[in-house]
Every structure is written in C-alpha cells, then in structure tokens.
View 1: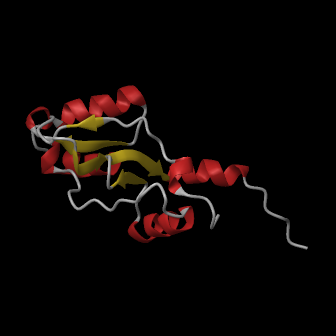
View 2: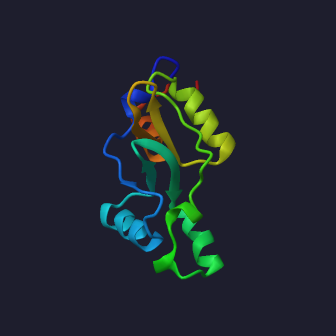
Length: 133
C-alpha cells in the first residue's frame, strides 16, 4: 500500500452545493445520488463538507430544515489530501479523525475528487494477502 496513491482510488464524480443551499435540498441531492456527502463550494473554492453524520445534528437541533442553509452545519475546517498522497497516510488520518470522506485537492485545480472509506474498503477487498503459516 505504500506505493499506492490517492489519485488512483479517489472519486471524481462529486456532488457540490453552495453555502446557501438549504439542507433539505442537500439531503435530496445526497439521496438521489446515493452519496454520503456533498462538498460545499463557493466561487470554485472548497468551503466545507456536509455528511450524513451532520444530519444527525440537524435533526437533533430541530431547526426548520427547509429554511436552513448547509453553511450552518457543514464542517468548515476541512482536512484534505492530494492525489499524490500515499493511501496509508490518508487511511491513518481518516481513522485518527473518524472521517469517512476526505476531499482531494490540488494547488492548480482546487477540488478534484473525494476519497472515502468505501473506496479504501473496495481496494482492500481485492488485495491478496498471504495466509499466516
């Protein structure tokens, strides 16, 4: 896994919303596309991420969901990775922080993809490891 990089496993089919998008609309987008997160982008810049887990907080606080923008609940201090980062480092960071989604960014292009715990699990399910002797 040391020679495998994020760019090989990340998803590039991203679902994005603006900070003023209503949480109900973000939820519908996530459900319609079968994704666990949307990336919040403004003027081409990554501003945050809203995940299924964030919706627990939204429901618990019982604000009028149809009138609530995602910026009220998104994680704004987003931990990111680059396409050239080793998968092991990303997996360690995701485990350490309890993340299931990590946006992939580049200095030149900004947001370019997403690596998820499902991507890592799918990769590992195909890796053949020797059985203990």
